Length: 363
Image (cartoon, rainbow, N blue to C red; front, side):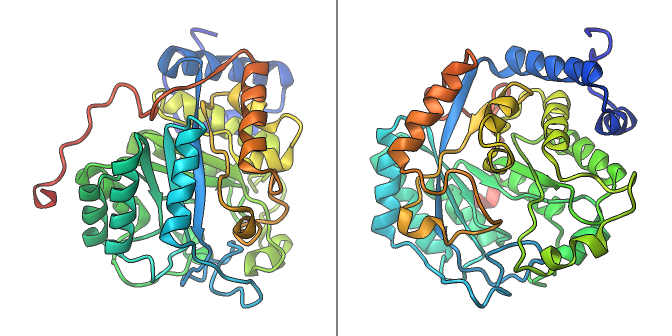
């Protein structure tokens, strides 16, 4: 195993692993990823408190359940006091990070989010991660100045034609998501990105290229999850029509997602990689645990107020939707301990990276 996995896999090797179906061979992949995870980020599992602050979005993405195309969905936007209460809960539960996630809501302005970040940082010793979609440099600089630590922006697929099909351009920034990820690094953020496995029209070659791109981008955080069709979206309505022929289409199943998580760990040894809620949605009994045993080192308990949680419906039947924050933390701790791991302390930033000096115009 040492010789087989002594170096980061090439794109061709990634492709072979994505197509691998021999359990004995895959057991070697799981063990290698778990070993690399242990050597580089240790046995701690870091908890990020997820707050879905708004399901209002002006984009018309073909796969997303909170897209502007959804005229049947009740919309909400949390108030600043509600968001600050969630941050206080994250601190009380011992989470090292709070993640503020939303659709591209035009009312979540640069100054409004900056004030939220300042308020959180002044009251709590929490890292603040933002996941608010494609935003301009002015907003990104302002949030960094306010104290934001990390930014998550999935590129979803490196296949430009497929990306354009599922993610119509807003025509505002004139740059791709890959370019935006580079810009986030230049500004001084810890940078997170990721992909969906099994988008209709995504080939095995596409997914292999995605995973190889993780290494090129040298991501600090990598989110990998299965594409789960939403029946009330254009892509969900055309899944079978758009799917590639058998043998070409990347599967959107649990096994493929584990492979992608393990390979992500091998190409980016020091990155923080969550075992996602989408994995738990496919396998509630042990999906998160298996993800953690195959390269992941982060989980993201949902601390969004119950009144809003069901309305942040990116995909249907999301796991643990009815769990209270208290139930969730108790469950997470028990699951982590059941596999011989321990809950991490502090913000849990990427190991081995000196934070990039912000661009001159940020100061």
